[in-house]
Image (cartoon, rainbow, N blue to C red; front, side):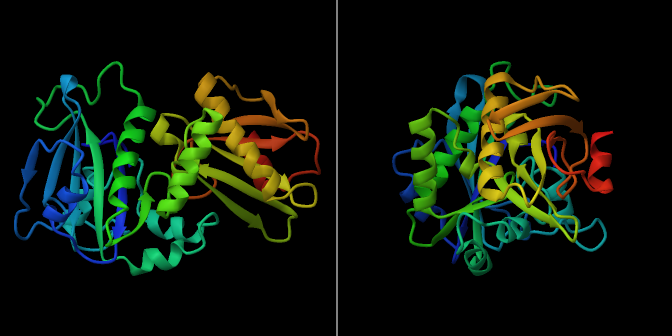
Length: 315
């Protein structure tokens, strides 16, 4: 979904409901600017919330909202569930988030095997959202001119890591990147990023794999780069030449390249992350696999002939 009220959002899945006092106690090292009470009967539009400062000089605020129900992985519809449909439409469950995000995160939880089980166990959710629009005039800009998506996402990710210490917490869920992680996995990802002076892609951007039946080819893609105002990648490759252990690092290095250079790649350009593969690029506005998003499609220039359905992506 496009950005609405929030510029960034992440979540913590809980095994049971928690009170706002319990959450406030977990956030004892953070300043609480305001406490907002939920209105009865408004499950998706109103919830007990804590408001924290982010960049007060430009109306930057963080909301920590308690949803006493599981993550709504469907969008509802205007006739049968208008409140849920409206909440999704207004971006209440975060920008760059699409229905089915939790299901896809569970299916592609390769780096954390317990992820699917933990997702099924959850009964409540805390959503941490960052906005510059709370209480701002209707004609105010959605974000300041010096807005840095990586800094904003990093700020709320740290808050999520603190909330994972609560005994009711099951795991971290990044809906825009469709990732599930436990507290230890988050710690390791942040430590790896710090050691290599890169962004913590392992908890912001998932890497998925899809095989094409009988074609001898597969695709691995990223999901989550929109949080950094960048396109995702989808890389096609023959499975008799390379496996996911080779392609996953290629995608990580491609992400690092974009964050340093910006999207300077043009259709037909070639580039290398390693001596093994030379990639050719093609921008596509629609990803091959859900969710809908712009991607840079990649194909190795020295490989077997691609199946027709994949070759079309490069015309």
